[in-house]
Image 1 (cartoon, rainbow, N blue to C red):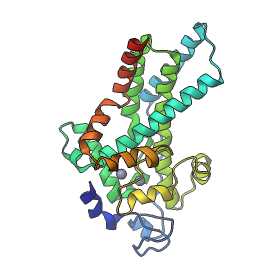
Image 2 (image 1 turned 45 degrees about the horizontal axis):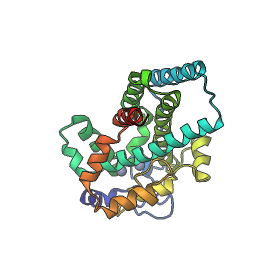
Image 3 (image 1 turned 30 degrees about the horizontal axis):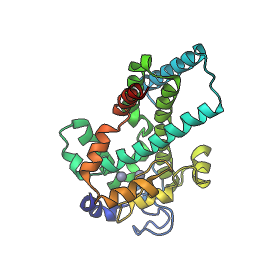
Image 4 (image 1 turned 90 degrees about the vertical axis):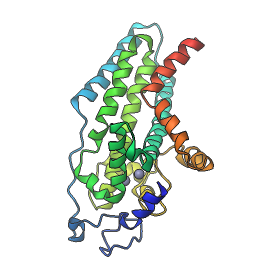
Length: 272
Ligand SMILES: [Zn+2]
Ligand SMILES: [Zn+2]
């Protein structure tokens, strides 16, 4: 990955204000035709497909009905538990997904969708502004569909909280993806929704400046899409382990949003 990333060092996003191709300051923009003419690339509409939306809504609805029919109450503490657990997991998973797919080894993965995704992630380093013309939010549709689908398939054995956590993980994933999109949009001088503008300004979401480091040599940092444990846990551990591909491989294929639901259910029934 280091080599690939070093090869593209000269292609990292650059400040639109200079239009000279040298990165300075906080802002960064692509050296595209439109940027060099002073016109920021147009922003594509961001939307989620109807299938992932419907499956997630169904999962939440099931959880609400199940909760309503149970004797247990669902208080603020319960809600905080769901929010925290889903956020911590989403922060981990988004970091893992990004770090793993940035590895050049995955460009020749035997699993075609992984090779395709790895190419997409790594192409983004080469030409970041392409993102602005794409439905970045919709790119996780298949992931959300599968995650919510498995949540529904296991629904007869899971609690309302588990259903809410699964749905919230997909929501945090969407938030991380959209913040990535709008972070790049900000660097191109676009107006962005207040959630991302103030979320970044107040330090609640990763800023475009923070993400810029991922697009600037030596590249090997900031794979996160949410503010979380990347800087204190995931990246220090990853580097301490010699940036092991096998460690990433093991964690990516075992602790993904599909397998972890099955593992959590199995662990729950063993511990119960
Ligand atoms: Zn990357
Ligand atoms: Zn980016």
